[in-house]
Image 1: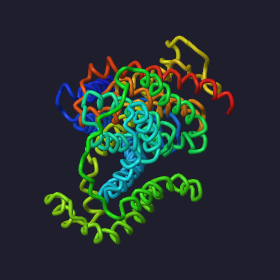
Image 2: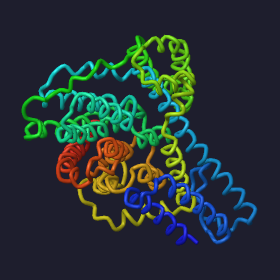
Image 3: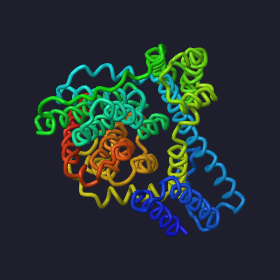
Image 4: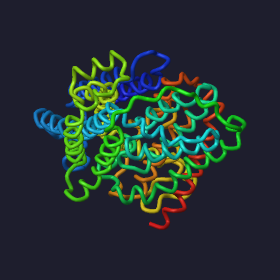
Length: 463
């Protein structure tokens, strides 16, 4: 039965990876894979001889001696435990996405556009790279990419030039998301899973992540694509509410407040996110009546806003397919963890993998294993890779292994356009060709990844 479960997982994984070729949204195979894995566990429960008790964080080798009722009861408890842990992540993401949509409701991100005052291509490159690096750490790399590519489309009319900027934004956004607990789904998973803390995450990863962004941007500054000045598109003044800047700073501040709330109260992060969402929503409702004094809204947009409160409208705009995908993939990985399959795989990996490079100081995991995980995240979605690592390794909180995994999984995806959420959304917005990105941008992302990894290996000796 274990072989059947692994086969279902592998086929689901393959379908997720080939999403664009199959023309099937990845949430569909993720949900089917999750349901089938747990169904097969239920059917073959009596044949399993080991089980990972999530409540006790221990592998039960005596599981085979349990009665059918005892096994069923433990399976139900385990399923409920994993659903609870997964829901923590999903509720957190729902809150963050809603705050971002509320900011956008008030055209808050148009404030960022006013920062671009130059026509020099290199200066604009650095402005967008730094903005992507900072914004992704605050509002997550996916949202930062959407915001910045949207702004880019309004100020750069030459698409061939815009593609280069979009490629560097992807690299910078993924790098920025790696050093913040709220910057990427994978780092959020590690943070909520009590594998990393905010202070140590920033301490370990800020410099490697910065170099991962800065080195490719520096190299790109000397490429022919960034020579000279831009023909900046002269567009009409964008409609802005008088509360645009206020809502931008309030929303970003509310998201940044979440890690502080967790450190002070020791409550799960989603509690702080719900508090932040509530505060932002209060101001959004108060300000919403003033928003309609603007005269340049499109008719259909005015109707949409008029029929909804800011919070209801923002909730209708969030990426629910992404939420369901995370539910499916995390619960599917939990099925493999519960059977002890991930632990067996981790042991075999360490036995067969040549110990190239130095070992991580406080764990037996080789650097090359974590680097391969980063390279793998360019081909396979980094969410299931990190979810799997949570079940494979048992190092304590803030062990450098978790921080290296956060860096590798967060930044490795930049090497392919389909390797990260930021890349996929930019691909959709700008219709970026897979092979164009592979030829023009992938090598820059690889150099940044390796330089950042080398910086991590050096700086970890300081902790």
